[in-house]
Length: 203
Image (cartoon, rainbow, N blue to C red; front, side, top):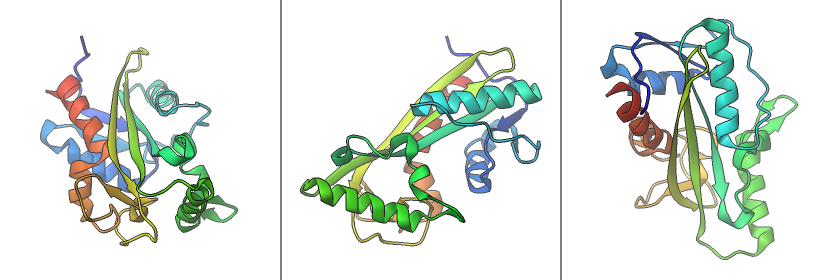
């Protein structure tokens, strides 16, 4: 039996303003006040896990323990079948440079790696998201979500973030980078996980 969320304040364990706004919008019908980790001056814990679930748990439990509030975190990334699931949990790491994240470089790296395998298109893959809602007493609930699609090159569109310009979701002619932000949020891997979260803990 899933535990129901009964408070009116939820800490979202992210320092990413875009992600915070997205989550606040998804929860707007449930009378929940959403606060981000940056507003609570929380440090970002080291994500030492080898799976999306492990990393999401690290972030959620650290935030819940530090604040005494229920905390929601997500860990997400891109799995490319031709690369045996890479970059996976290292999706953001592929963009790291000495001066910050460069996702154009990361997309080029992914494209080059795919071509080195000799795999013919379509280059299938998926965005994955694992949401963890943790309580200060150590209990948590887990909700995974996915969005299948294919990698395209060159990238198209300047909406969204990360690898969105090179990911075309199944059933659509547009990449995530060409979609309106809120349309993408409605169908994304995070939306899939959120539907399960809401049904399990907020309905």
